[in-house]
Length: 206
Ligand code: SF4
Ligand code: SF4
Image 1 (cartoon, rainbow, N blue to C red):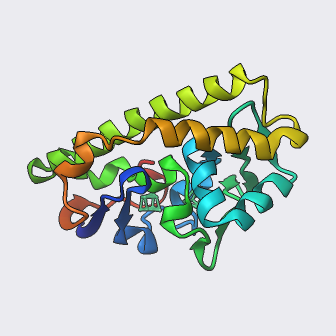
Image 2: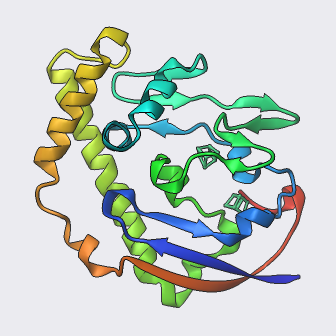
């Protein structure tokens, strides 16, 4: 059985994301889809964005009892749920409670492979855009982690946390003065419709 899936690509620089209308009728049919198998990880680019745009969420994350804090990242560990897991931001009724711009990178970019949009000839520019964006974010986040480490700071120490995120902010501000060329190559938004073969339950690949 085939279905049409609408994807909306948003080019918002470092906060770009992909909307997928199939998520509301996810073929996994378990009310959690890919969010049952992932623990979001917030790195420097996300932490600094939250500082500027949703500081209360930053406070909430660091107050959670299910987090793994490393020197320059924080993971919100999934919770057991039935025969798999569930992300702590996910509810059976309403899905992810975070708007897309507040989510970390994987959650903003991920589209399950069975939708197959990356094989669509007309969408190759978007595929390249999100590949370049992922590389760019990794480069910035690694650089920010080194910058923090060089100052003897770590997120593992609760007393350092404000200072660490301020140092990350300083580093990212320096490094993002020039926007990368690929940000300018795509429109701010584009909608596409692709056709894919539906399979249900665990037959649908994550
Ligand atoms: S598995 Fe695919 S369709 Fe289901 S929620 Fe995840 S991205 Fe959406
Ligand atoms: S943060 Fe949202 S999108 Fe990401 S895994 Fe959790 S519920 Fe899913």
